[in-house]
Structures are given as C-alpha cells and as structure tokens.
Figure 1: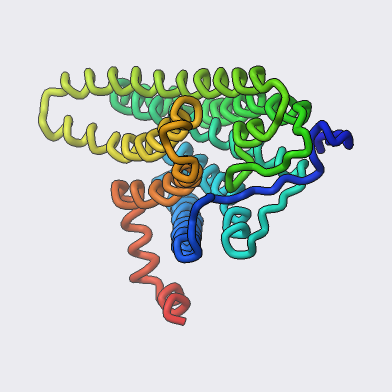
Figure 2: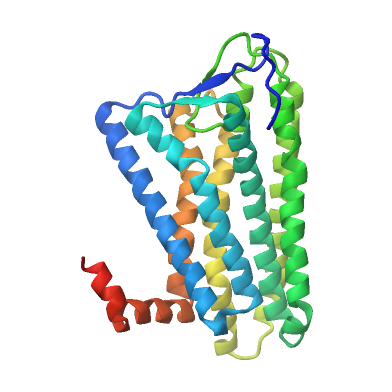
Length: 324
C-alpha cells in the first residue's frame, strides 16, 4: 500500500471520477448498456477461449500459449476499469480512495504494457512458424515460453512501478476531481497544481519505449514474414501462410489503433478533440480488444470454432443450461 500524505497540499484522501462529461440521461444509459454488454461478452468470449485451449490438446502449442496469455490479460484489463465505470454511470459513485486510485492506475498501465508485449511475442511466434518451420518446436520450447512470459511481466512491472510513486508526491491544492472514468495516469496528473513535467515526460518515455519497441518489432517481423511468403513456390502455400497471420494482424489493429489515437489525442490534440470523446476512446481502447479478440480467433481458428460448435450442438447439458 502506497503512503498518502495527510497534508492537504499533497494527494487528497479521495478522488472523484467524473465519468464521461456532457452526456444526457439517455446517452448515459445507452453508453452504460453498451459498455456492460461489451464487458460481459468479452469475459465470456475470453473464458471460452481459455477453456477450449485447456481441453483441446491439439491447441497446446506456442501460438495458443500466447493466445491464452492474451485472453487472461484482456479479462483482468477490462475488469480493472469497467466495474467502477458502470458504478459511475448507474450509481453516480465516482468516489475512489487515493490508494485504490493508485493501484488501479498501476494495473491499467501495467496490463497495457503486458498486452503490447504479448502481441510482439505472437509476432515472433508467426515469424518462426513461417520463416523457420523446421526449427519451430525446437526453438519455442516450454522453457523458452515461460521465460518470455516472465520477461513480459517483469518489463511491464519495472517500467510502470515508478508511476504511482511519482504521482503521490505531486501537490494537488485540495482539488480531487479527475476528468476520466478511471484513474488514468495523465488524468490524475492533470489534477495536480505543481510542476507535472517529470510525470508527463516519464509517461511519454514509457509509452514510446514500450509500445514503440513492440510495434517496431512487429513491423520488422511481418516484413520478414511477407518476404518469406512471396518466395513460397505455390499459391496454396502462400494463402495458408497468410491465413495463419490473419488473426494476429486483426488483433494488432484492434489493440493498437485506439491506443495510438488515444495517446496522440491526450498528448497533442486536447484543444481540438472534445474531452468527452477522448474519455470515451480511453474506455473503448480497453473494451473493444477484449471483446473482439475471442471473435477474431474463434472465426479464424478452425480448432476453436469446431470445439465451440461441438459444445453448443453436441453437448445436451450445455443446451439444457442455455435454454433455462
């Protein structure tokens, strides 16, 4: 638990999250229903992906190891913000104590960094599968997969850990209104009345170093993958190789596009983009990938699709429960 100074010039004991400003009652209701539906469907979808990968032994491969990591991360990521956001919408409960706000801030940004690392690892998996198929299983061993997973978690924890400690030492001049629906780093920093340059600079460096490195690695990996695909002798081989990358490319787009847009708007477009639009995009950036990823892999992956259909059609117990 982080220490929170009692001095009124430092962090107040509680913050008040304002949610998404400028929404009327009807818009708040419809927005909250959409958020709740995306959240529930995301939990169910990712839970189904995890279950299918666990019970289907043919899916115990490096690619689905990373997909399992992504599914777990999506469940925890969305769960770190959505329940509180729905509480603001439905109960007007925007109050959050300072320690909980700092913990939420850490998890939101740590899980974002973890997701970026998982997507980069999945690109490496596809690179090995297409460019070095004969060495795929000998290189991506269970031991290496565990080391990659540990490295992803360690990197995210190390780079995000200083953020709450920097935020707790800012001066707030008794202001405790956070213009967001969750404790985003820069949203809380903007509440402070003291010099925010170090916090802002550190957040910028972390975002560019983590996402920038991972995105550059993904682009480099797919450049090599495309070069290898174009050298394949048969059209069928090329189509199969492209098909194995299609799901991952869709997931990358759904994860990075709203993230990059939200980052650019927060840093450079606050005067041109309405603040409520930015907060809305901040929620979409968390919710949409968690909702879309199971659909993308469920549609694109034959083994997952067949197993889900088997559960729904051939298992009478499941059908009985679903009809209640």
